[in-house]
Amino acid sequence: MTAPHEPAPATQLPAPGPGARPPGTGGRQDTPVPLPHLLGETPGADDAFRLFCFPYAGGNAAVYRGLRATAGPGLAVYAVEPPGRGRRMAERPYDAMGPLVAHLADALAPALDRPYAFFGHSLGGLVAFELARVLRARGARQPEHLFVSASAAPGSRRVRPVIHSATPDAVKQELRTLGGTPPEVLENDEVMEVVMPMLRADYAVLETYRHDPGPPLGMPLTVFGGTTDPVAPADLLEGWRAQSVHGARIRMMSGGHFYLHDAAAPVMAAVEHTLGLRTGGLGHAAEQSTADRP
Figure 1 (cartoon, rainbow, N blue to C red):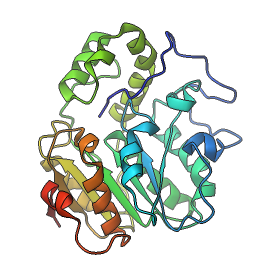
Figure 2 (cartoon, rainbow, N blue to C red):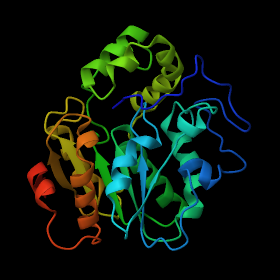
Figure 3 (spheres, helix red, strand yellow):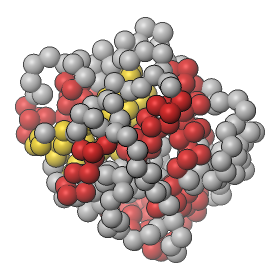
Figure 4 (cartoon, one colour):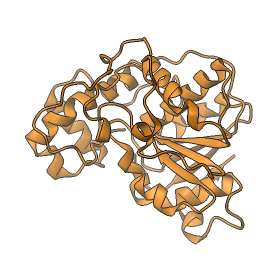
């Protein structure tokens, strides 16, 4: 659920930028973040279908380079950059789910003017799910499909230790256990000092999240899981079936919690096939890597 990705080579976290809010506060910004700041670019006026991707805890928009690189011409992939990382390093990260998804709903609103879907890995899966619920409550256009990856269903039991309030050594040990974080990052005290506030905030979003049961979503739901994932094992994915009126299709991929790092091509093939943007079969690689459970 976590893995710092390309952290800034600073020795301390920069001060919050103009208009940034303290983590965990509930009010929305008066002016939503401009789309180029959130997505790294302005969405194309000729996009036929957009896929918005939400990173895992400790990750930034760059973790979705692989998905972007393997997408076909019919799908415009945009990686969302939450505060506190990447190009938004100068902003304080959120440490609670409600304010985070309210911020994202405000900021993404101008880009939801045509068919789109959400994809979220680990914490990003829960963020995508809660964002879809907020958009429904606001009467906004809904995603055509929700893709959740390596994320236990809302309300599932915890299977990992609490990290957001743990010692730095305990945080590092959990990252080593989960994999996905280069050893040279974990062993670099200056880099870890930079990313630790963001890691703690992201884990706080995850670990203080409490699912508020409500009506199932109206769009189809696809769940990806890693066959050896210790964070979101197969039995903890089953609960997603209750979160959509269509149930959920569960696709198991070879690998652990960060299977996505090595499976961008088969995952993108499955996404495009599900959205009707890729004809024929999933391709040899995808067929070898996935096992479906309707």
